[in-house]
Amino acid sequence: MENASREANVRVRLTSGPIASATPFVLSDSETALAGAVVTFQGRVRNREVDENEMKPILGLEYEVYEPMTSQELHRLADQYARKHDVIAVDVEHSFGFVGNGECSFLLQVATSHRRSAITFVDEFIDAMKSHVPIWKVPRWSMPDSTA
Amino acid sequence: MQPVSSRTNRSTGELQVLVFGPQAKLIGCDRLILSDVNFPVRVDELMPMLIHHYPDLSASIGVSRLAVNHEFAAADSLINAGDEVALVGLISGG
Image (cartoon, rainbow over all chains, first blue to last red; front, top):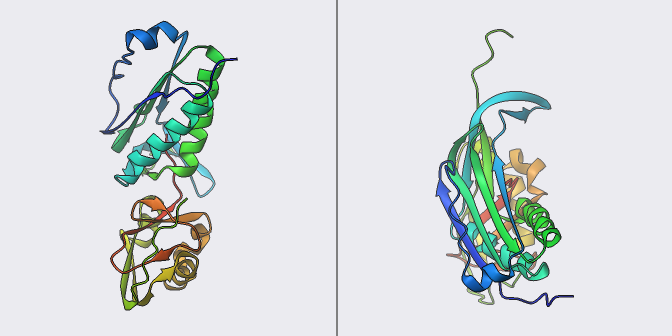
């Protein structure tokens, strides 16, 4: 069993608009030597959202953040779950402002020694983020479908 | 969660509470304004005041938390005049 108290390299960024391309996930030589698993997760905007119990088409989502609290909470949670899962390095990037449907609004990259801990980290971190981090989204609705 | 403030500066005045996302859209503005608030006021005393003055938020305020000076505040935390207060509810990152 590996020591689960390693100090992880945690990076957090907020980006205006869609995340067009992944920031290179740079690991140091010592981190690379230990990182047997690197998992990248992209959150993308769907083309529909629920409105009054009905799915309706959207152009995209308007994301709102509350700085510096948003960055602080992202960093705190990333650090907390990194310690729990013996993460070597984690990079969190989230959009603010408008992100059109099909575009990326959230990018999570994590390096661990083994696959399972990286996948579990992604799952648990995202659940925690959705419950605790002040990030809001408001749909920008499409015009009513003329064929409807 | 940490106690937000141990100061007990007594005064009466206006309190603005920042509001975001769907809640801001619902009430049509980005802050809630309460007049004649007796400071310091506890977080769990402030929530019913917000519901009373902004009944449109009553459905969502039960799943909301208050942040004071950019940190989540416990129910028994004290809010003083000049603190930055935000309503954090209906969040949905990702």
